[in-house]
Length: 205
Image 1: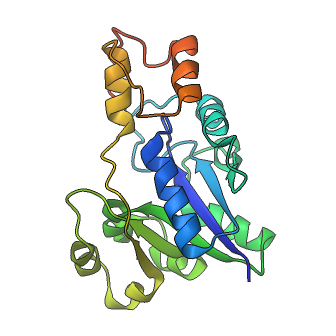
Image 2: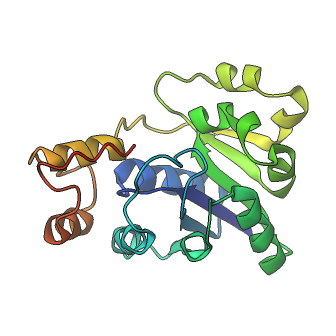
């Protein structure tokens, strides 16, 4: 049975923490491929501006171009309204009826899973892979979830790369270096397009 990883998020911008998480999951879970799915509007960030989806998708394509297992899937940025993961997983299940799906995210996000749209349906559609995040223990995650959900949550140990898109935007806005935080092609794209420009009052997270 083929195994597909699905990695959803804002990716504003994509960085090495995202890429390392995807590679760790691909290797440890023997995933056939990992789909990077930039969202249109995160239901958790409705009040915040986000860089247009097409631009975030282009940064992702630049970042994953050298990895044959990584694919950018832009279905959510083509879909109007908030991006609900359950809709994406249902579409992917219809398209890949014989595949086993693994949704990649961090322990902090899995801890908040009860607040997601249709969480029980999500866990029937895919395993949730919780990558280690600073300050969130596996036990904290399990304590926040109903016992019946635990069988569908897998913990992914990995190097704790404490890199955030928020920090990259702030550094760029302040004219500081983001070298070694995001791939060179993404760094160049951000610079050439004037994204997160110095002097901006942007407070996106």
